[in-house]
Length: 201
Image (cartoon, rainbow, N blue to C red):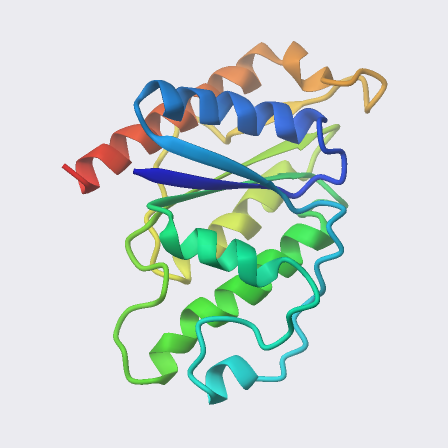
């Protein structure tokens, strides 16, 4: 089993990275292979709504001047997809939005070609967020909408998988002071591992 994780934060080693790494460590302890990709700061472009991927029945984007197609291949190979984003104005970062817009549009394109399943159908999808004061629930829901509208399966959790950075960036990993938040992120990792094992038993 393999989980591809995507860090939407432009801070490569910041709070979101730390939370993703915690979750991935739990998955690895459960024998699941993982790989983490840096989306924030990558220069990924937004979707241009050109429809070329659908008109030509492609499973990729026709534009190749950013890493989207490389990440899309990893998503296709993966049994699970883990997304993480800091909270930017009560939502995800622009880079994370570009990733889910373009990957989701391509994944759903198979429905236009007469198929009954999306490209990511029955994969496991999980999302988490780092935040300062508020907005992280909406950010997580934005990422979960990507999973749900591409027929992925989202594991439940005891609470939202979010951790607060009360230092507002003054500390490199301020979110590691949020004990409850770290517990919820750990629970997400365990729930994701359990679900993957049930689906691939």
